[in-house]
Image (tube, rainbow, N blue to C red):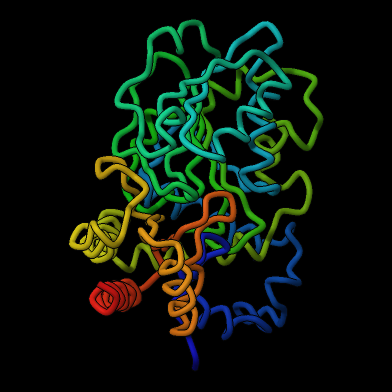
Length: 360
């Protein structure tokens, strides 16, 4: 079997044991004589898959009572519109904290449904940091506050979350299940699956029932959270195979020791690469300020543009995949999601060390 070091930002690496189990079950799931691809979403077999997946997610994240878990489609990008469509009135204002491209996109959608106030502290600094605090005026009278917990393009991450007196909503697409989170502090959490949860095509929403009760009326059926909640995420055909794979990924996380153990692993992986950047500050230039560094997406540049091109070419030749930075900012990016093995991070750190010594 040939496996490479996959540092793609998403779709991202999946655990090898999960892929192997999918391979074993692909033509005959649990002696049904059918693939999960072929199962009716109304069958007892599929309903059991979805129920087990939800139960394991609730266990791993310690989701309290009073929250619904929804399995939707359309990615986080659709959530950018669904959230204000359901929870922002034309005469209301929402507060958004800008920390990168995806929060900017979320603001653009929200502005179509109501007024938006933005915290632009991070934007003013080139998206190198996370706000230490939020202005009280930003939150005053807001229908909700929205943050992006991890920023894949700029490589910044909230180390702790703001305490607010309005419903707090978070896009956690790129770091959900990478560390424990205080779910009870949020009214809604959403995440595209293709980073840490499973394959592309599935979006998970964790929403407080109290917020659902206050949702706007006259929302198009497929964009109405309450419709999906009342129909157990099966108003229409859910992304059945993606839910199945997510269930396997959650079982794998549990086998690693749960989210706390995963957090330790992720911290060690990130430290192996950040330590090289810090050891060679005259050679590698990290984008994020140290206090705001992401454990998921590590972004940096080389001080010389020609050398950076050579670095990326050599990384590609050594089959380190996905190292080139996002097209909007350039540079380099190494994504270390849960399923990226520690050995892969160490190999890349060794490559960085060797390259720096060779060219100094």
